[in-house]
Image (tube, rainbow, N blue to C red; front, side, top):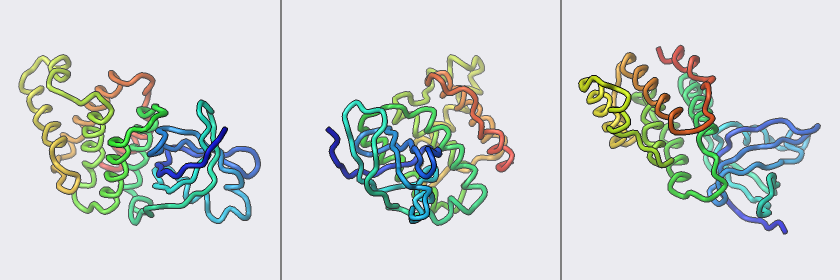
Length: 226
């Protein structure tokens, strides 16, 4: 039997379903990754629900939860943090698209993970307010995210992929600094180092997470940040 629960959530993906409804994949605070049907979200009386269901929207939800159900329903939905810059600044929007794709490809667990959820909502709100070193946010985000997903980028992995100690040590220093620095005090990176680090980090993710495949947004990201 389905029960009603309150939970916060982060939208990953929304697709059209039938004439006026949608199906949304949402990472919830209480239940992990879930799929929901939102009836009438595209109807005349939807009251702007589609605007709430854009990728990375931060929501307060009242949801029906039936154990072992592949799809549940949402009873109530509202935004608990409206973005002020992510959806209008082209550089931030592009980075957000990339981050959303990476989250969609790496987070699959249908169970509660409070530290990961808190990390995500805090990081996104900081990014929305961030004014300096915006171009490096996604690098730092992926470095920090890897630890929450249980596969922190470490010196041992770098050693396996680089024979030259100078290259290995340089990468490890940069990654260690990004991991320890707060998002509020990001480490500046020049464009060449940023591109090389992104390439390195994506190799790491692909080697540790099944089914990532091609990252469709990465070429647009490189173009916007060059």
